[in-house]
Length: 379
Image 1 (cartoon, one colour):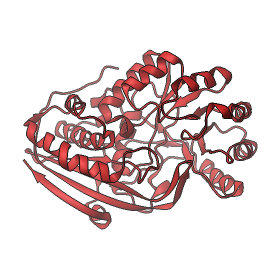
Image 2 (cartoon, rainbow, N blue to C red):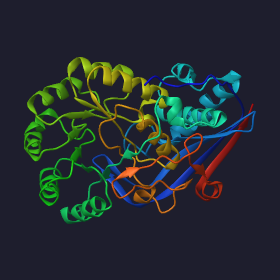
Image 3 (tube, helix red, strand yellow):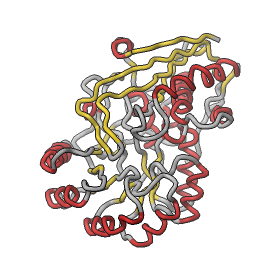
């Protein structure tokens, strides 16, 4: 489907940044670290017509996932991207990514600002965001992502809990020493559940034997087994396995995607709106991946409700073949910042809220409760 983009220019009256910290219900642990709270920068745009749009810059703290951090996103927004938006005059939300490309790096900050502009754009038109991106509202299948636990028993308990809630895929984070036993245990307990493993780049090609053993468990995919830039090594590993490899951290830009395609480094790509620099770049990468015959799905960090809601609208586009990592708000937070909260139905689907923009409202009371720093900029 061709993207439906109405050319409505936005004149930005003000931009406010809200740095928030929201506690997680339980620590989230992967091969590169653990976090107990979600820190993000919310971007609030107000247009000259009085329309508000919200975005979220959502890198994880420290070096949990990438070099991008909340500190860096805050700095890039206030020093570079907010002045850029205020200085342009009339902004075309569908084309602003071209201006953002002129600034190297900082994909999470770019995603936060662009997300706010897309939201304001859709609300100005009174249209759902997914329609402007070229799709239509439809139920989005949700899969659960399980971190690393101290015992296999804990992992099995969590897997059982979320399978009973209807999640349509289980993903297990793995690392050296926490791989063969937990995967075998989950597969034995849940033989029919679509199962994925995610290494977050924790292995090397010297660990190929581990993946040959994992290959026997009927996995949906093996996500990011090797280092971010190990495209050639990933291609070699893929040739040795039946299970499709999925590029996550490696698929960080259109240029990286071209290398993955050329080398055959993966058969599936996880497109994270935050990681690639916003909805427009994500949409372009989806088109290129589909043209090259790669399977596609939408991942998350995890994120708060603002970014999750926009990810849902992106995941509603055609061509996403696998359940998204976007989960119910209650999976991570006792108190997400949007209303209504994101929920899944008994069949494991998330239904996009009706209405303009992303369809959800941001609770100002909750934003104020969890804000640790804020700043407003006027045109």
